[in-house]
Length: 100
Image 1 (cartoon, rainbow, N blue to C red):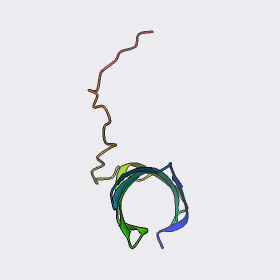
Image 2 (image 1 turned 30 degrees about the vertical axis):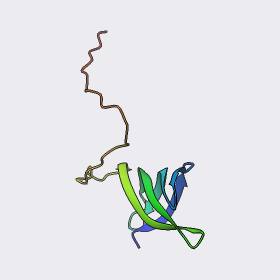
Image 3 (image 1 turned 90 degrees about the horizontal axis):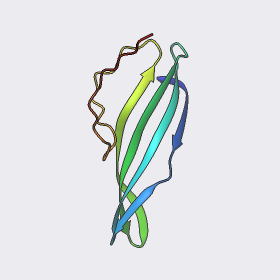
Image 4 (image 1 turned 180 degrees about the vertical axis):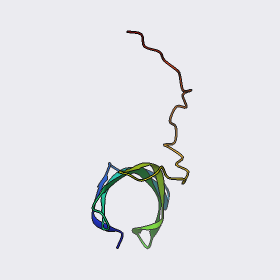
């Protein structure tokens, strides 16, 4: 097992219902402690769910886990692309200078 401990924290779920199908969106923060060195790892992302109604019961059909960022002490940055949140404003990086 890669982790000695985990703790997942989920936002409220936003549901969009369309007949017998629905989509759900929730944001997640997860704390992990690595088993090999007990260092912490933090993860931020969202869960995008597809839900279907079958015989009057709502069932999960699919869950997409979309990473936004993670932070591990002492680890190099991840090469995995992190797409960010939908609808987030794209802002250009601005240089700023401070004088004493």
